[in-house]
Each structure stands twice: as structure tokens, then as C-alpha cells.
Amino acid sequence: MYLQDSIVGWIPVIGSTRGMDIEMKKLSDWLIRYSKPIVVFTTLAIFAIFLILVLPAQPKIGVTEDFDPGYPDLAFWYSPEHLYGIAEAYGPEGRMAYVRMRYRFDIIWPLVYVGFLTTSLSWVFGKLSAGSKISRINLLPICAGLFDYLENLFASVVMLRYPSLSPGIDILAPVMTMLKWSLLSMSFLGLLGGLAVLSIKLIRKQIDR
Image (cartoon, rainbow, N blue to C red; front, top):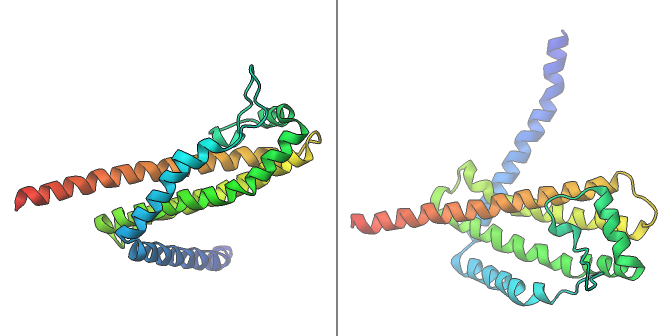
């Protein structure tokens, strides 16, 4: 009886997981369907413009001749103590500047890299293995973007509350940062690997003609 009740209790969970899997497949397939070359090149151009012109123009906060506290979200991992150290180095005006940047530039930037990576991965893996589970790698950048927004939210809370501590939030911020960079790394590696495989296939196809 206990086993039967346990199985029955897991049915909604299994059904929910399957439903989520179906929705993820639909989203992945939709992205592949609409990621045409013109869309990929457009998102690539926007991404390149941001890398070359917009990112270098962003102001640095709390920089002196002898010290640059940097931005916590550029590190793969940082401790709560390190985050508080950066908040202290920024000073009151620097902390407010950091928060303003998170809700101006950092609203747009994740959309830029998510757009580029998602469409690029969709096009490449649409050519290689459309419909297969591996093609759902095109969803990784979306998850990275969501973690980026959560990272900005938690880091901003820490900055706004400092010098008061933010227990819990101060550890969630670096966790979100780590997840963001992990998924972005997998996305870029997947894109490079997919392009390499696709290039080999195209070369072999030309040789066989």
C-alpha cells in the first residue's frame, strides 16, 4: 500500500516533467525554424557592435591609480566577503552607479548575447540534428540570460543595503554568476564544436562530388 501511494504521489511530478520537456522541445524547434541566416548575421552584427564599441565605453567604478575593484559579475566566482569588499571600495556614489548600470546597460546586454547565441546554435544544430535532444542546446543561452538578470538583482540588493549585510542574498549573487558563466561557456563551446562538425560535413560533401 505504501509503495502504491508513493507511485501515485509521483505521477503529477512525472507528468509535469514530461509537460516541461514537451514545451522545451517546442521552443527549441521554433527557434530552429526561425533562425534563418539573415537573423543569425543580424544578431552577430549587433553582438559585434556591443563587444567593440559599447562594452569598452562603459564607465569604471571606484578605480584609482593603485586599485581597481572591478565588477563582481565578470568573475566566475566570488565570496560574499569579496562582494562586500567591492561594495566598500565603490563608496556610496559608486554603489548607486553600479545599480544604475545594472538596470540600464545590463537590461540590454543579456538580450544581445542571448539573441546571438540562441540563433547561432539554432541554425548550426538545425543543420546537424534538428529534432534531436542535442539540438536543445539552443536553450542554454536563454537560461544563462535569466541567471544574469537574477545575478544583477541580487548584487544590486547587496549594493543598496550596504553597509548592512544581506544574508542569503550575498551567496545567491555569486551562485547566479557561476551558473551564468557555466552555461555561457557551454554555449560557446557547443557553437564552436557544432561549427567544426558542420564544416567537416560540408568539406566531405564537396570531396564526394
